Amino acid sequence: MDFDLIIVGGGPAGLSTAYHAADKNLNVLLLEEHANIGEPVHCGECLSNLALQKFNLNPPQSAISKKVNGINLISENHHSFLPEKGVVLNKNNFEQWLADKAASKGVEIKTSSKVDSVTKTKDFWNVKSGENNYKSKILVDATGVSSFISKKILNQTFETVIGIQYKISEIEKKDEISFYIIPSLAPHGYLWVIPKADGANVGLTTDQNTKAKIYLDLFIKKIGLNEKPKLKTFGGLIPSSGPKKTFSNAFLAVGDAAGFTSPLFEGGTHLSLKSGELAAKTIKQAFDKNDFSEASLSIYEKYWKKEFPNYNSIIKGKEKFYSLKDNEADEIISIMPKRINGSFSEKLITGVKLLTKPYLIRKGAIQIFNAFSHSQAKFYGW
Ligand SMILES: Cc1cc2nc3c(=O)[nH]c(=O)nc-3n(C[C@H](O)[C@H](O)[C@H](O)COP(=O)(O)OP(=O)(O)OC[C@H]3O[C@@H](n4cnc5c(N)ncnc54)[C@H](O)[C@@H]3O)c2cc1C
Image (cartoon, rainbow, N blue to C red):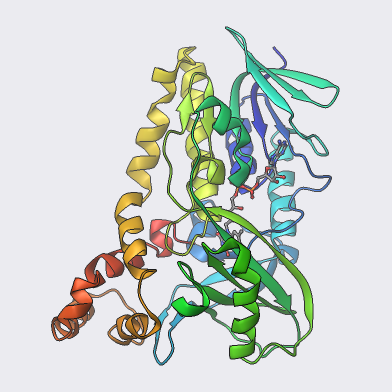
């Protein structure tokens, strides 16, 4: 056997799986199709301090573009600030740093290695990349939203939304991330301004794939950024329907390939890092038992279900929220505290305000607030 474990995909999920598996003395190969780990970037690049602390990550300065004090939720006339500290990464450098950490544990990383096909024999996986064939006992799909291996092995797909953004320069420096809730400009989604040291990532998600750029142009005009230099346009698809099956015989899916993205605001890096850690723990146990069956690996699902928030309830709140009109979204934000502290009295005050607007309850305000509160960093929201 060439390797205990082959991981396909060198994003945060694959790199985390690789690092944690090698840390448990497993023999790991990671295959990444692009020439450089971390590139091209397809992310807003926000990550909470909680996520960094949880994994004891202390990235170099080159990986951190800007520190932020929290997230401001902004509607047409109101705002509500969530004071959770975090960073805006230079995500290419961050992932390269994660790769260096994994390599220092002994992970073999091969870039420019697109995996074309995977086949399973009774005892091992055959992984084909160009002219090369590799064998392993276990296979991990970390290919992100394309999830091309999971589609084949687990025979499942998930819904996606598009995320598109401009990198804009010469803009006023802010120490907070801004999320704009303006449904007419981002149907079934939201918009953002994420500050970086040299500008900002300004973008949106929506289910209207073909109109996303039109909406983004309207948004930057609305907030007065349309004359600013646009350095690049980038983005990608984001899984939006939550995870389904994530394991099979000698096989696990992690990160976006498993559909783990946080449903409301679609942050996925924190969840990717954690799913990699849980996958490595599962795989180590399988080696200890010498049992790579589907039943043996099913413990992975128990681990993540215990750890991650309830996707279905967040998705319910999200559906309600993203069905609102601009004025209704504005009313929802208006009854949220100006600065969220999560206290009991704060919840009580919000509840009382809500009682004065029963039509908002009929519109799903309770499910919406539940989705909001389960999108915080402690629930892997970012
Ligand atoms: C516009 C946008 C903004 C976002 N903003 C944020 C944010 O601010 N914060 C946040 O936490 N999340 C954000 N996300 C989500 C976040 O980017 C993802 O959840 C996260 O990158 C998932 O990590 P991953 O490792 O699962 O997948 P990916 O990062 O997608 O990595 C998958 C890797 O697999 C490789 N690969 C694919 N197919 C093959 C193959 N056949 N062979 C070899 N390699 C292959 C790819 O090249 C890639 O490197 C955003 C997403 C988008 C689209």
